[in-house]
Length: 345
Image 1 (cartoon, rainbow, N blue to C red):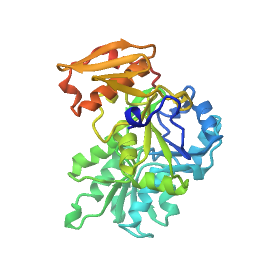
Image 2 (image 1 turned 60 degrees about the vertical axis):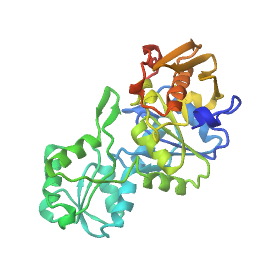
Image 3 (image 1 turned 90 degrees about the vertical axis):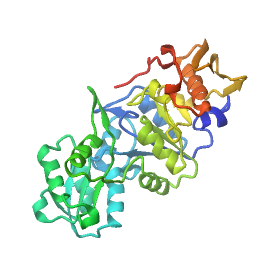
């Protein structure tokens, strides 16, 4: 993790990169509006290297996402956007060849990609679909979930049809707060039929592999706001990652992050991409970032110095806790360590 091993005082998270791959919800925007400092920071990135976007949100097409981002002040073409429906269609092609009929649960983003891939789309289990593909849309209703359940009633190992979900994010950040995501809707179908879907998007690797190939990235940095999808997926794909605290996961989640879901960088917002990333040093069990110092003794996480910035205290605390190899519930953690002054939707 660059947080402790690779960061140097003079480098920024962008040092040595040839591409930045950014999640959207909670990183660039929440609902229709850009998050503070996101657009200016990403425009600076685009002046120096390739900038692409990866989204698990299946409700919109790559063209509509690009149009939205451009309206916020970015310069984005559809080819700059990698979506979970695109990953789902690539996965589906290995199971059911086009022009088979597939039942879609989701919105325009999923329908357009299915039709582009040559599939026939239905919304009814009575059309004997060869597979079910499920993705997020705010318009998904109980009737849509019921049709999926009807189509999937036979277990796959007994001759039932495949079930692919674009992603299983439990939540999605919206302008008014945090709302149920596709994982919640997928779980409703799972509860009804007792089957699990195959996942195409983050944290699975196909969506990252497509982005790396599309942008010809050798040394990319991935930006995300969720440990369980964004950061875990980047780790699985072998990509360095940065968690930005403008979306779903908060400081307490960072401190508790298990191995395999830990970011290389922790950012208060996207301005930190362009700032020197402070080295984390360790001496006699004391972890220090700038003026913030933390150690662990007898099960107590102790703040020796708060420093001048809460983000540095969080970085030091995370390094100290992660270095033990133990889960956070093994320690007594002071509330100051997971204070949350950072912007969130």
